[in-house]
Image 1 (cartoon, rainbow, N blue to C red):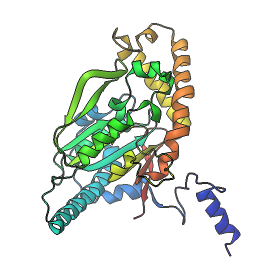
Image 2 (cartoon, helix red, strand yellow; image 1 turned 180 degrees about the vertical axis):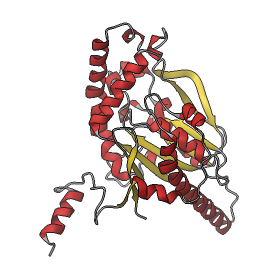
Image 3 (cartoon, rainbow, N blue to C red; image 1 turned 90 degrees about the vertical axis):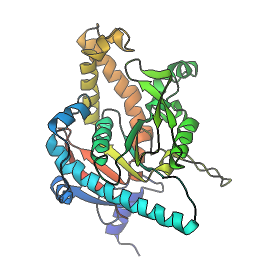
Image 4 (cartoon, helix red, strand yellow; image 1 turned 45 degrees about the vertical axis):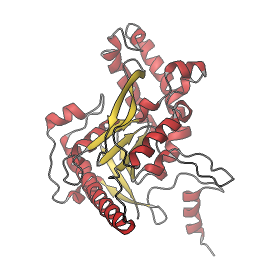
Length: 336
């Protein structure tokens, strides 16, 4: 018979009759928990290969990452991932020899998920820079799922413009085809290009991914699943193609603050350009701009976070939880 104490823990992890967000810690958690100091010690002798100048180039707007963050958080993470990549590469070679086939190199795919304004772009670029300095992965490419959004004209026609960023706003078949080709080892696979300035997919422009050692895919909903069909037919998810996944986490109040701060900084910079989709908000009052940013957060981005992004957090292999200063304070690594 389950004791009341253990029953309480089970309820915390699994919820009342339905799956909910697991507690990130404790005996029943699928994750090992590390505070910042504990995680930092796992760096071992991993060398620091980035400079402050590099970080200026890699950091995103309103995400003030510093060298100590790279040393304490990113170097242990890159060390762990390099070990995973090398092990996967050895397994691939063994399997290829066993089957007596001459398959192409299969890239190691890392997915990065999390809310708008969490800092996904920064972590993706810093990780790309660090991983490309390892002997096992000299070629590391980065793709965001923004390019696989339907064009604004399609979103407006389907009356889902205010659902932009939700799962239904993406061309999922095209994204799955892209990942399938990458994972099959095909060369010169193209992906659509997105412009944050015009807030739309750029017509007839693509980026080409040609057999990288590692592909990093960054996006809001990359850990999203759907209901399985009752007929048992296979339904691929984006995450089916991942070898490792990361979720960047923070309290909702902090994410709201960071989003609005970023919007106001863009209002004073990129929004000033006439070709910017948000140019009309560059000339309104600060109070009106803040009100609009709050509306975008509350009625679009927060809804997306609560409905489709945050529920995928337990599916990640690594969860990085940020504090008020954008510093990652706690790390959760899935137990093998």
